[in-house]
Image (cartoon, rainbow, N blue to C red; front, top):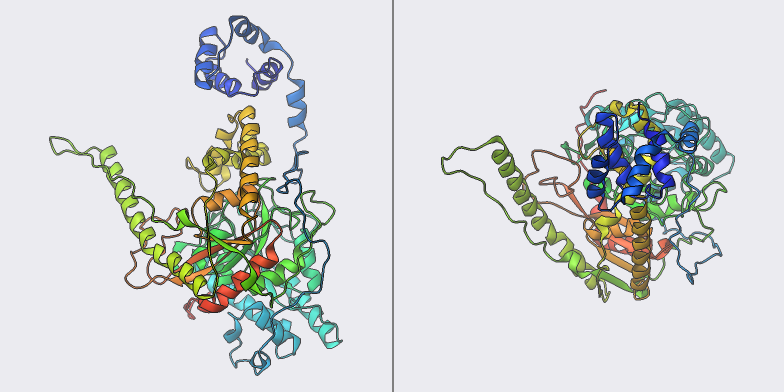
Length: 619
């Protein structure tokens, strides 16, 4: 019987493993249990290469060669926590960053913030962290009382929104008691002291499951807390819940159901930081941590009307977090205001001595920074209307329609409706430019470099497939909830046929993108852009930070939500749902980025609106 591992090992010795050829050839041969010269020709044609006759003979004869090397690596059963020896670095030669840390400067707190607490404590559920911090600091409310209130809300609204995997109640109440005792003794740890928060359930928390949202991992646990969890513990923040993520960080569907958007519970919250976005927007945690590889903070923040910060790649250590793409994963906060994001980032950034991607740079938050002196650009073509996709019609002379024709027509109608929703939403993007100009900013026109972004995207899937190699080879991928062509099980299999030569060349193209983005940031400090579009792909590939914040709400006249929510279109929400805007910063330029985003948020006030949930919801 042919052994695939021995076969791949042998062809690698011939210098062919760097093409699609070995995988294609094995797929053909596996069915017939033997390799023939004709099969080699067919596989070579698919791979787009030519195999000389003598090499074909060697391939056929070489199947008996030993595959020890490949087998020995697989025998290691590498855990998800082991990163590759190759480390992605977004920093180019000559770039310099601030090293000296100065004390953080928060915004001043109005006197009213430390006044009497509402008789119904749930009246503070949607307060910002900055405002909650004043209640704690002035002892108007205890952490234990606040923690219990948020735990009660999590229980009440989880049946509706499906945002919690595990409540960490015992841990939370013990923490809250400790920080209250500290405050009584005069030990105030800072603005996160006593604030209840939620962790995306790809962050390890000792003593509790860390499920990664995936079937087959429901009982998985780790013996140590993630670095960011330890750091928030040190600030006095109180972890009250492990929040949902789409299975293995894709979308909003997890093994317990689908996480919902609190503005329209018929729609999903999008993902993969599904629970973090939903619970924060629903006023069920003070803030949360999410993660982003390609839109996983951006998208749920948009859907749910939260404010999300995707930090620079290499700003926050990922130790203790599930790896999806070692060169693209980033951990960041999802909050109710921009300044909240700054306060959380200040607590979690910086090297931990374990994540080799993290640089020693300074983050000096100053809420009073003069943002008027910043150079601000905008991506002009990203704000332009998108040309409509052609609507095709299918028919027959007899008037009969096949199932395929009907399906095609449904798809075309869905595209037409999606275009109408995106066209409606464009008014909010244009209003943002007008608002920024009215704030006294002279916006500089910019364009993204013309590079094949889609051609670089297999980098993510290839790394993800490696991170979950054992899952695919063992067949345990069948336990994952979603099994469609665009879901992880199929994508992981597709990635096994991704040529290594093309993987390297895609990374070379990525360097061209990094250099082009660096040139843009010689002209500006911050770039404003619509949240969707090419910028999302480009900046996740280059590692640039971004703030995503609410930018208005669709009116009653807005196109209705689509019947099918595939979690890949954030214009789907329908009347009454939020839209967002994105601010992009230079590498490790979070302080300037957040200062401008805060100024815009203060000027517009969209973050102060919150969803009205059904108080009668029961556990």
